[in-house]
Length: 206
Image (cartoon, rainbow, N blue to C red; front, side, top):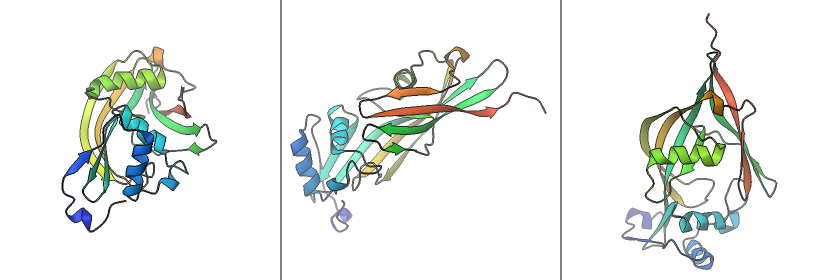
């Protein structure tokens, strides 16, 4: 949690090492007054999730002289479209996430899929990786770079940590042979993600 007085002049920041241990990370979070008791509850991810982000190079955590903690991630947001031979156009949407502990989360995302960039990974390379890993889609027809922006806020997934998201936005079109009318299922260690198609254009003339 950021100290309002210290935040006026945060001073130099120190970056936590990518090989930081769970115990050391917990010590840093507690020293920074982060409400670790809220992690793993509701929409919040666990401290182990945060540790995994750091260890895998997906997030950079810095701490200033007043023990204020900051998180920075580079994220790919991609809309996935399919143009069918009968003229119908579909866009993919995330329907829900079902966690192993029984929680179900429905998110109103700004795009079809989101993926954190790996260290030194180019955003356009991340598009192919995201579709392959999340949807098992191997082939892409077209990819369009539609912009970049940054947003800083305290997400409900990591309570108390001011996070800056560097967002790379793309639109991708997959071939009809990769189209699954029933949608897609992505199984992860802690949760399962479900994706469904939404009709954008019926292909019928007025």
